[in-house]
Amino acid sequence: MFSPEVDVEESLRMKQELLAELFKAESKLKFARFRANGDGEGRQFEHMIVTQSGGIIVMRLANTTQQVHEKKFNRWTEEDQPSLYVLIDNRKDKQIIAIENRPQAFSETETVAHIMEETFNRRLWSKRLQVQINAKYRTREFWDVVSEYEQGIASVTFKFPYPNLPEISDMVGEYYTELARCTNTEPKTTITAPPKEKAVLQRGNLILESMIKAASASGKVIMMRPKGARKWRKIGLETIVQEELSDQALKGLEEQELIPCKWQAIVDFLDKIQIVYA
Image (tube, rainbow, N blue to C red):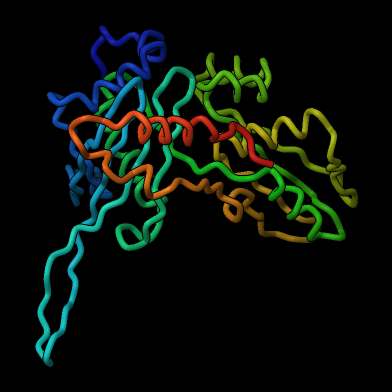
């Protein structure tokens, strides 16, 4: 499937440079969802690179919709293309994507994440690279769910990301980091209480806290099965992280000469995004 010249280790070392190349003028980047059977592109989405500098990319993604209007009892349909902002922080060891929550354009930010994920992966596949875009969530969600069940928890499954960001890899630990690298997988571990017992899940347990932090920081859903239940609970869907950015910081970015104070507001916003949210 791949030419023998592809060096996977080299691709991993150059992953951020290869992503940055997609946003060069000559790359002809097109955002699209692809057909379920994999047979070519499906629906395409217009985009505009607003500005980029120092590894930070500001772009807009538009969704084509049909709007029904009515005036003096006459109705007509017009095409509309509402858009939203996407901020991509591709600075060294950062790799964060912030998606504007604007339902007029896309009902869910997750839809935008899927569009970008599919588009990037189609372009990076020849280099044996794959992008995953998962929403960060707060670690407190884990403990909130635990507290809901008086009978306790029978089993918990953690999935860890492929070693990428050093700060997250440090939380996962050397064992799982090396296991992921040498097997080219995303390892997962399941802790299960003995029959008629319940798992001891206590705050302050450094190993448990590290696993929760690594999962939430990388957006990996934690699976939890309460005692006496057959269904598993998904941890990571209720407390997705949101940060506020002033509309004034985005206005005027399309101007040819980038206003330094506006650009600094974008940088400051991205810098305040935390690895882990409590």
